[in-house]
Length: 148
Ligand SMILES: [Zn+2]
Image 1 (tube, protein in one colour):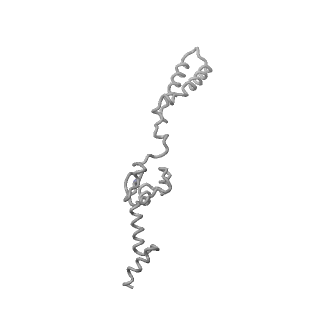
Image 2: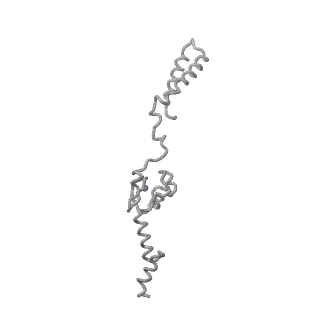
Image 3: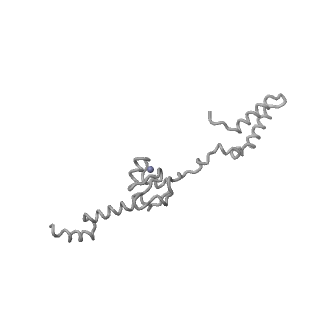
């Protein structure tokens, strides 16, 4: 059985009551039920418990405000509120989400970082330190000239 529909219950009760009367024809009952169905068309609005409001909001509300999801050291997961240096791996491992799915889920802008800015900085400075940067290579070269 599906969950009880109050309108249908009332219709059934009314129809049954009428059917037990000898002075009412089958046509009268059919006409009455049709009329009642139209009357009870607004029944859904009378019984709001039947329609949970949560079902109408398709977007999932984030665990923390989106504007607070990115700090210098961490990017916070909007699904569970945990902070990470890199969110992508967590999304896949914990929530089975791709980066794109995550962005779509919370309607995130394209430029919203999923890697903590400090982590990006550190990678960049590490790259510079080991001489991958174009400008710093010259610096590294002059510093290490004695070693060569
Ligand atoms: Zn999470």
